[in-house]
Amino acid sequence: MEKISNRIITQVALLLLILLLLILIGKNLSYFIPGVLGAITLYILFRNFYNRLVEEKNWAPWLASTFIIIASLISLAIPLWAIVEILIPQVDALIKNTPVIIEKFNAVKEFMASKPVLRNINLSEGALMSQVQKIAGYIPKMLNSIAAIFANIATAFFILYFMQINSRNMERRLAVFLPFSQENVQDIWAETKMMVRSNALGIPLLAICQGIVAIIGYWIFGVNNFFLWGILTGVASVIPVVGTMVIWVPVCIVVFATGEIGRGIGLTLYCLIAVGGIDNVLRFTILKKIGDVHPLITVFGVILGLNLFGMMGLIFGPLLLSYFILLTKVYRTEFGKKQELVAAIEQAQLEKQEEVLLKNVPSKD
Image (cartoon, rainbow, N blue to C red):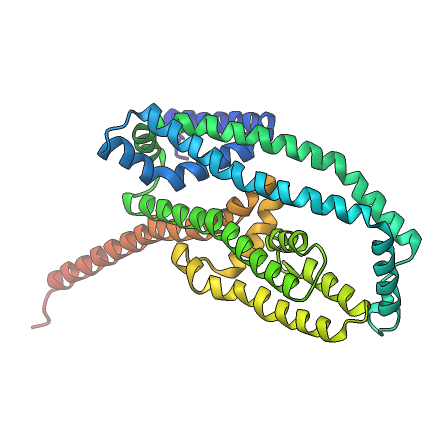
């Protein structure tokens, strides 16, 4: 039996040790994984712009990185401040209108009780209290999530700074460590850029557009607190499969339940055609140019990513699925072609041996 060389044993042991340390580090720093993923996302999005500032405009690396970080913080803070400034008064007004809420809720109960399918939905006080208790149980988790979001935003920008000022050296080292051919390394980089751009830019763009379209529709058809419900409709666009229907279907039911049948029909058709249709229009126009990603990868990737990474999973969930498909192709090109080449060489050698044997066979003449 052939003896395994000490070099191979050392190599396997070293790889196992690296893997063990990676698992140990990842397990104990899992709280900051979204921040690391956020830094990678920002690095990819701003890579070309940063390189232009440093290499063409001759900016100092620290200055270029600091400028990008400050600009990113401002672009993130301004819309959040504007939304909160507008939403808080509307939420406050909604909470104070308790009689109106009770009146509309009772109207919805009566409306649903008269419909064959909707009557099966339990809207009793016991069922509602149970749901309220469940929602209340999520409040501490939401507060912790908010704290985690701010901590990971700080982590993302902290890591981004050092990634950018060492960008060229970092990329060279990564290229050396990846055990693939140059062609496959370029394919992986191109796939990564496309997926990050598609999700980091495409998902917020889709949410903003659907929110704006919903706000316009709710305003036209006289929905109370139309801005609040429009913002929530846009946010709901990230929910896999059902998406914006989570918001606009109940809104339409309330309109029907209050006796506004014509307005309810108009609003329902508007939401089906405009709010739902803008998704398809954007996917085949703007989003296709940003990154042509199959819808199934997006849907199942978002479900996977939300379970693994929270909000950052919106970007990196689809990326994981794409990597799985890409790595199977890489395996095929890295090893499949080599096996085919070996088989072709062996076949050529056999054919050559046969020719030699035929030449050495004595003639009957």
